[in-house]
Length: 201
Length: 364
Image (cartoon, rainbow over all chains, first blue to last red; front, side, top):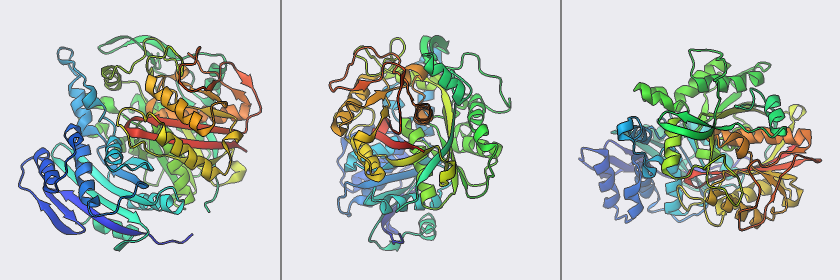
């Protein structure tokens, strides 16, 4: 059952910068996440009206995935395995703000639907038409050991042909995304050590 | 290719009972936990909630933490916990009510997992699965898969969610709440009833301890809509196909289906279409939401625990709230308590974000 898998593409989004396969792909001086993420997506000529309806976590995941996948072949069977620390707390806090006072009680379905961490994986599946395996995990830090094992299970079992893995963390103006694709061919070996390296960028 | 994985023990805690046996007794008597109560600004709302919050094991912990420990402790008490014992927590909102204290960190799911792991004596790093309404069932898949990959020898899967104003207000804003107790698959169904519960399962690769074998499972996204199920049931169909392919059995082998059955118009219709596409229309099928309401991140594991009990007792549980079929495709909805020789069960769940999970169990 020993088969070797590779990381075929990887990306980091943090502090106004996007690194594609280790190279600076986009940099912005925007003073807010909202402006930065909008400009980052515009920078690669993405026209996707649903983007503007997303919450911040989904926008982060969306932008990171656009950069990750833009030069990669289409593959419907791409599983998405994401993790973060705050879950959907950024939007949870907004929803809570709409119900905390009786005089100001106006819960909104457009906000409430994003009070689940896995909605961002759903957004990516819709955007890229990935009819594939999904899982969303919450942890204080990226659990590279478990994520490595889980991605390899999906590939070894034949439950996925390719796996999009990574971290999409956002709360307020604090954000970081590290995404990578795992498949049968690629530039870097899919090892726990290599995954940890990606998080050093 | 991968070694078989078994469930050796299950437990659950709900308003119907503080352990599996009392829950089973209540279900066989047809008792429902749903009743109309006031919650914060919401008046006379139908929910399945602990009426008198049971005596807390530890008042330094939240109510949710207490009932999660209550479900887990009987499974953990006779086990030797090592670094090779995994702990997987399933929840959608965890201690979300702690937002009211003004501390966002208090509401972090990782913090909840840390508290529970410490109380239960786990030394491995807890894993939290937070994947909408499929979380409880998906967490079992995650545990199975990680044992198969050699990361663990055994895994405790623990699931829980509670009824909160946070979630109730959101479902109300969606106009997804049932008027009156929910009625899964019924022609007069009008939405969900929310509930709270916790459930636990012990997974192992030791056949001698297994009471059921996890024959196959899959969790495929619809890639269709973030808050509405696919009209064709595509993701659920592919999840079931993945489970059947792994299990190496045919749909005709399934003795009963424990469906998701939230009682929203679209969910139940989607499931009926998916089961029809799989050739499962004639297979006895139920939803337990009429007893427990929708317990969100707990539901998949709660209903799996009851399915395990059904297999062992050779007894089918009827679908409370169901009278007249209200889906475009035929389903063989279980309407009476039926004693029957049971060997294989298919459990499914679906949820927001286009998520689906299916799992096939075989009685040992």
